[in-house]
Image (cartoon, rainbow, N blue to C red; front, side, top):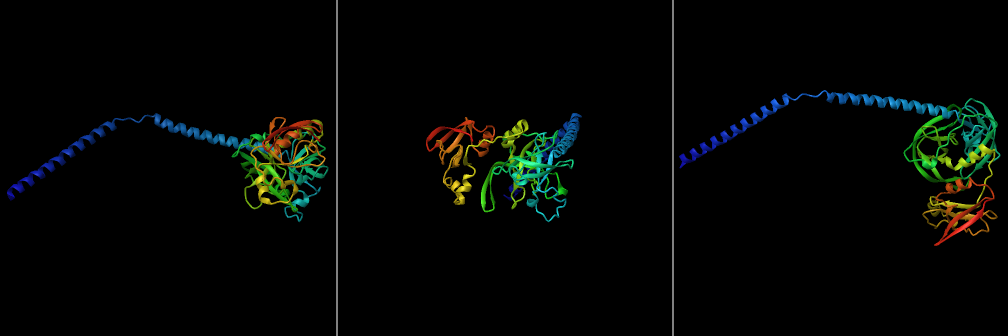
Length: 390
């Protein structure tokens, strides 16, 4: 019995040894085959050509970047020649250590928009219409300036100086801006030493609404361009430009409690006014005689609990399109017409309205005594109302 077990165990061991030997032979043959096969493979020179081509393309990309950087620098250098310094005092001092504040001196920035001496800036820099200020050009020449037009709601002004053949900026189409586009802000922050400072950033957002509180009075600026390009005191009134030098907005305000949040007024709103001054030397401003809000302002009113009569009617209203008529100016063009407070104006002369700047921009193209037709919704009723502009 034991002899049989030993014999079987011996045979099993032989089988295992034979199996392992066979496997080893097969693996050796397979490995030898692979060695012989891959030894005969030749590496094509074209593989290296691909690497060399990629290297060449990378060098070209670097050249393009340097070329683009040079072009942008050239454009900015050219644009800064069209940027001016503005002060309410003829000698505003030349030191940032001056005891006078930026607001007292009216230190700020402007940009030349016509060859015959019209300067675009902020109203809080130049003062209101008929105010006097002093404009210093890039060449150092200083001119007496008179504010020919201003709008406190937009915080924009146009000042005239007695000069001709000036280099002036090109105005872009601010309706076409896109979030993420590169922009540059040019201005005179703080004082004389830092004149024509250039900062860069992107368009962070568009159609922003902000609340301004000054002297116990609240107001709203709407449809603003938000940018993270640095804007400091003194930058007010300076241009916000594309890399090609075209102006898309006028820098106006920053959020002081946060970094990288500044705002500019879109340039399209003031284009009709600039064209009028350029071509005729005057601008006859037409008015419709209403105080209205677009939908971006309504959330501020709903949370403010304001007692201001002009906004109290708007605090519980919601709408998707158009602008809300909060107040009709007494004895104004819209007074004694079919237009009522609480109406929502959806279009003017068949042009759709969604922001106050849409309305302003169109009205600025008209003249006093021109007639316009408003499309108005009042609850479920739609009406067409004609108004003669004042």
